[in-house]
Amino acid sequence: MSQTKEEKVAAQLAKAMAMICVRNTLLEDLHAGPVPVTRTGDYSDVFVVDADGNRIPWADVSRLDDDEMRDLMRQVVNRLYTFQICFAEPEFQAVVNRWLGVARKWDEPVLDRRLSGAPS
View 1: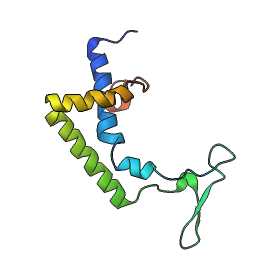
View 2 (view 1 turned 90 degrees about the horizontal axis):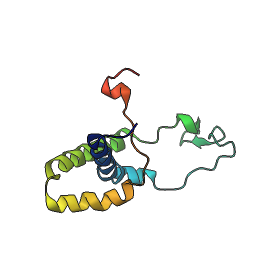
View 3 (view 1 turned 45 degrees about the vertical axis):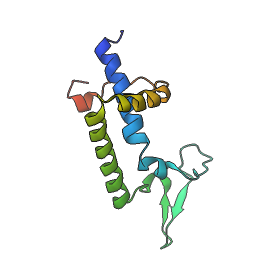
View 4 (view 1 turned 135 degrees about the vertical axis):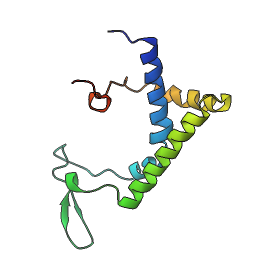
């Protein structure tokens, strides 16, 4: 099934917004740092030991505290707002086009049926 022009534009916009408004945020700081080694491949062999000596399985560890999540969401909302307000400005278009060079290499988006309310 080929994409309509509208779907192609929506896909490019989604990639640009994800790159500019989500990826290049505090999320990058939270993503930085060493990744634990796993020998099983599913991280079931990785644990975090907290200051009280609790051994927590990697899959159960919260990677963000409430303040980090709040700061991240504020930044994402502000960037999405800025993207929409500035989208028609030529200077901003140059920024979008620059980031799209990277984002175009990403997988094509698919419709999230749960979000859209469409039947699965």
